[in-house]
Amino acid sequence: MLELAVAHDPVLNARAHQERMANERRQALKTLFVAFPPQHRALLLEKLASEEPRYQGLHELLIYIQNGVFEPSTIPSEAAEVYLSDERATPWIRCKACRVLLPNRSGFWIKTGTPSFWQASMHYFKECPGCGGQLIHRGTEKPVEISTYFPLRPEPPWEFVNEPPIQQR
Ligand SMILES: [Zn+2]
Image (cartoon, rainbow, N blue to C red; front, side, top):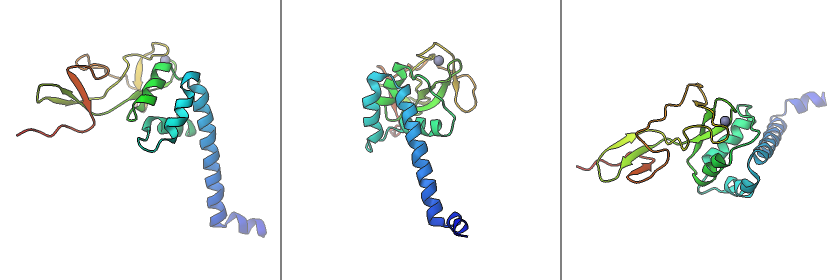
């Protein structure tokens, strides 16, 4: 009877659930830590602890590992550098060959000196920096269309912003 009471105790159940989640999170953190290139591991822990800015991509990687969506062995150094330097880079791209999750960022391209702007992703890479494999979307697995019009990263005259610029009247 005591076991039955314990099994139905909402407080104890909630606590067990929290402990399980914390444990899964620790396991995911270990997996991500080992997958990161050794020279970037200290910074990884520092960025994950950072609240402001919050490195969205790193937290998403942990969730995908926890959910079994991502089983990383090695994260290419170039991709690790993006996740650690751009707090808005999100792991929405996958390499078709080695399956690593690669960064992507949504926003707007602005051409300096013109009123024009375009909503389009920043891709950082045109192929997997680890193995040269094709880039596909994480969810749909469809090939990523890389525009040759925009650069892979901001460079003059191109700027990349999160919100559409306010129209001048
Ligand atoms: Zn690859």
